[in-house]
Length: 403
Ligand SMILES: Cc1cc2nc3c(=O)[nH]c(=O)nc-3n(C[C@H](O)[C@H](O)[C@H](O)COP(=O)(O)OP(=O)(O)OC[C@H]3O[C@@H](n4cnc5c(N)ncnc54)[C@H](O)[C@@H]3O)c2cc1C
Image (cartoon, rainbow, N blue to C red; front, top):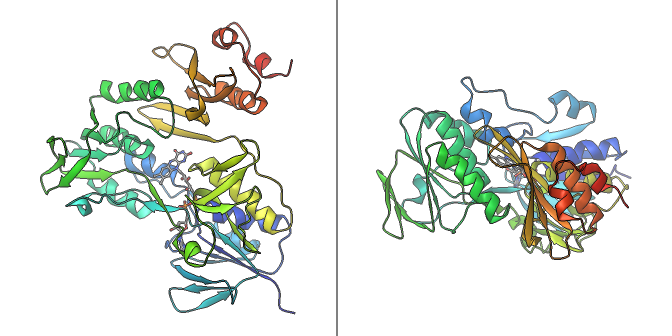
């Protein structure tokens, strides 16, 4: 009998970690990691930070050196796109005409930057890949008039990086506030204040209607002269080949708590996966570095026969204008917030509580310890006394301990 064949489509963070974790968990047979980018798997967070700001372009941050894949007998096919999945024949079609048969298949295809679909939208750069970051880096510099479309994490990080490179920066956001999907309006407002204090101009409620060679034009009549436009308007999930193969897709490739789709032997992980979270009891889809890694590892192990429900508390960080902001949990579930520390002096953390007084999320500014404790409180899901939470004299760890 031929050795079992495992194919992973998508050589990003989830795919690379899944491959290594699967081997470490004893997965036997051939293991092929197919990636359409020309590089070994690398970290994306530096692309909107150090790659744009450092005087000399830093080396890509590889998850593993090439030797590690060789040592674990993982075949990497960079620069190779998977173009279809034939479920009946159990094989993946590659753009170069080859086919890879599979016994197990992991889809870790992540996403691509959403394009700005307005007249002239093709003039805007986007940022998802190392090659995108290099192209953007080359265009940043003192006096360049940069317009960032979108005040999400990527848009604001690019704004901060452009500011650090001496550019004149304007941010245009169609929504009434920044970071709508990530944190509470009050914390978003505080972060916007950092950018305003640095001299960046931000306009909210301005949808971009067109981009001409000289300017960005808002639907509200605003005209902002621009030498460089960057669209940070979110990610488009690479779920088309899954959907075309009849694998269930709804806001992402649908998987259970162990990463399995409804089709035998087919899994999904990372940004592209909409997974059932056993703690929240519903489907979540997360876009973050930690999640891509941990979900990839969990699903890699599941493919090796060591399935365990994945129930991580959501967590992400962003670096902006010298501050490190960490966000844990699901801020949208909160009805009020309690501050520990004072926003204008050093580090602080906003604990976000639901109507029952439970901590459901936290946004920390240079406050990693507080955010770690918040994650324990989120997991504990028991009501917390807000006055004690706000009181710096009360040790947070004491609140996180079960009574
Ligand atoms: C610029 C940037 C900065 C970020 N900064 C932060 C941060 O500060 N903090 C944080 O928590 N998170 C951050 N993130 C998010 C984090 O990097 C992502 O959540 C993570 O990369 C997702 O990993 P993934 O493997 O699921 O998907 P991806 O990284 O998208 O990898 C998927 C890979 O699959 C490839 N692929 C897709 N379809 C096919 C196909 N058909 N055939 C072959 N290959 C295919 C893609 O090209 C890609 O290489 C950032 C993301 C970006 C883009």
